[in-house]
Image 1 (cartoon, one colour):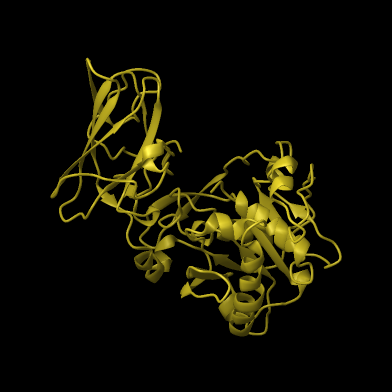
Image 2 (image 1 turned 90 degrees about the vertical axis):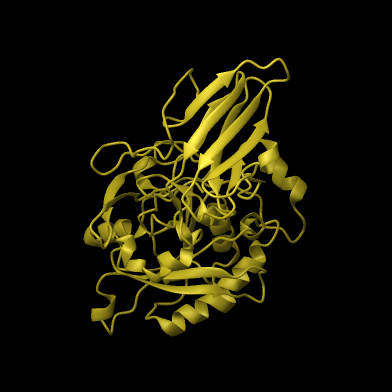
Length: 390
């Protein structure tokens, strides 16, 4: 992830102490790095971090095997108070990327602008010392949930925290987005779009990358253009079991039962929804796209359309090795995107993706279209109406 420009066009200030670009592929701008020749085995990276007073245990996560890779609680940094230190070792030529957390990705380090910082990068040639200063970490998600207006969202958000399931292990948060005008139209009922990785949809403070998908803005634009009717969006947060829950060869059947037998009845009983496959769609990106494809093909009586963004479709050969008689059909070799809308007859399943990038290859990431989202306090946050790459 590269630094993103603020809405005023300037790059956000880096959260680190100083800047030293010593060679191509060197440390992330803003990191102070010094190098020493070592007679021993290269290369040891010593990372020193200065954190706010009262910060708990700080962890190093990154791209090396010893860091998970990318396990949020991979290595606890030593020290107390404001100064923390850690070391990792890798061969010369290793491209190291790393970040800091308080033990989970919900609590990763922020930049001085209050946004999720980009990956720190180093290309190792010799023993290296890097010094960072961290201004703060993401708050507990519950604080952001309680202050949903601070996200700058259009419409209204309703959160259901820690939703349990008889079919799945972890509990998960669920958010329901009600479109502008919902509270003033007591007789109106709405189609429903169920989306995976719900934490990434509306609030840049919660989103994994610090940039939410801008679903509220995207829906509002489509409604204003008369392309779709106003809809309700249900965002289901992912958990640490994301891979197995989203995989058709693992727990996707159980995830489908959670949606259809547990969550959807509660949504329909609480909000003014239109039901049936002609009014119900499902959408996700990466493995969330694969899960959406699975759900719409295996439950056409429930879901009439799916949105599959940057979808992770395993190869036929790999799928064949994992398939069993109870497994879903193998992924097709080619899927053709269309622009025929979101909701339609139950008899017609349509595979949808971002129509602004139809010239790109199916598995490529659609381009980001930046818009400005303003929080309740008036500060601008960069947003994007894309189904992202998480």
